[in-house]
Length: 101
Picture 1: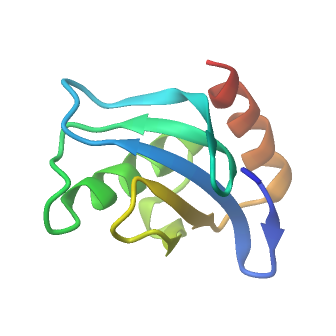
Picture 2: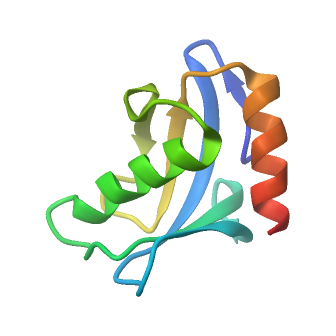
């Protein structure tokens, strides 16, 4: 599921589109971890560059510090799960808007 609350934060499922012309956050993808937020980044899928760009784009889109977003699942996959250290209600509200985009 896209926004499960954990003891250590809120889990957010993400589908990565590396090598895009510009960074874009929005839309939904039926991923293996539940409905996933689509994040397109310009960084290539090499040496973790796309994952880092996605982590920062997700933090920016959710209005949290980049340090508050950590990769939990999917280091080498396009389907990832991040943990966001922020109040669950705030993350859920922002995530709902982004998934509908």
